[in-house]
Amino acid sequence: MGLLSETLRLVIDGDADGAVKAFKKAGAAADRDLKKAQTEAQKTSAQLTKMGAASLVAGGVMVAALATTIKPASDLAEAINVTGLVFGESADEMEEWSKTAATSMGLARDQALSGAGAIGG
Image 1 (tube, rainbow, N blue to C red):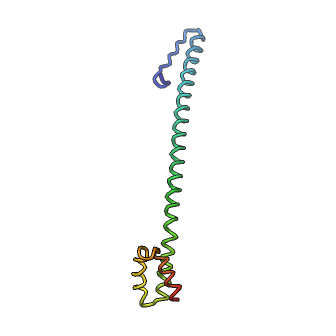
Image 2: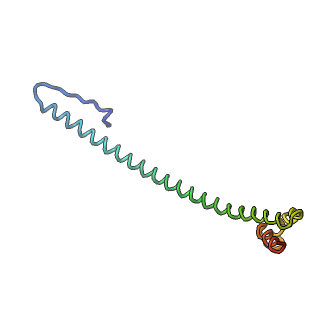
């Protein structure tokens, strides 16, 4: 039984031995309950540590995935900007052409626009 559910009864009849035994019994029950609480706290701590580690790994994977999309998007934006500078009013036609370059020439849009910009500029 737990410490909270036990009742401490102390009978004082002039003999201190009864009181000493009662206090020892209460102390032993408290020790048992404390050990149980420590064990549960250690289990909970271990579970929280595992959850924290898993969260860190998941966050790292998400950051890595996001990082792989930033550079290509930046490269495409830069290629579109250069295309506008090099081709002026014809830039829209070059951008439309770049959308089909992946299938017709095996190039990504930014590669097609960068190549066209190098040739045109």
